[in-house]
Image 1 (cartoon, rainbow, N blue to C red):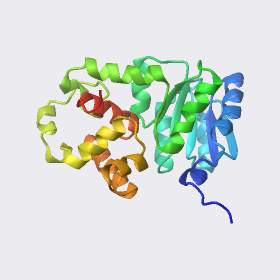
Image 2: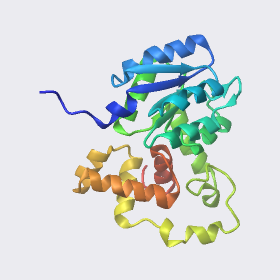
Image 3: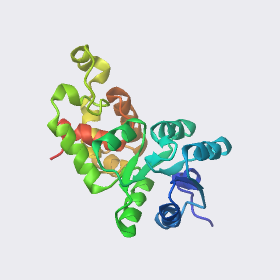
Length: 242
């Protein structure tokens, strides 16, 4: 009897790597199936235009994208990849680790941000996290996110703002009922912020994984966020994790 398929098998079966330099493109193409055996085919592109040609033929559930490409940065491409397939994991793989690159990438919908300067074993470990629904983040990037939001005034660090100045009616928006989390949603946010996976959170809370997933979806909607990385930052900002 064959074993049951995991949800990521179909999603990650075919992946796209967008990288303009030959050596790192080949490195990532070899690394990806090592990290995620679900990946059966790896397509590559060396520019935004080439990537969009690939996307015209297939909606990718997994993509590794360099930030700076010969025909522009990948901010819009990330949004297009995320929109093309529900649940798609788009990871930025780059050498840039400053706020100018990190926050636009996450705002665009990237579910991870890893540095190509790391050893292969470290990158493999980080990529494996996405199979569990966790963000693939280099440690320095995770620390930068937390520190960035801790240093901002509360008004400027509203979820989803990524450090942008709040609108004039931000104070009123903060009090809108739809932005207020229920007690159980706070519990779920706390566990996500501590790095627990959905099944683990379900066990700790004594509810089903399906119910936790529903809470996570509601939390994302209320807080106007779209990734576990942003949820972890919001949990830290609220003092839910130490």
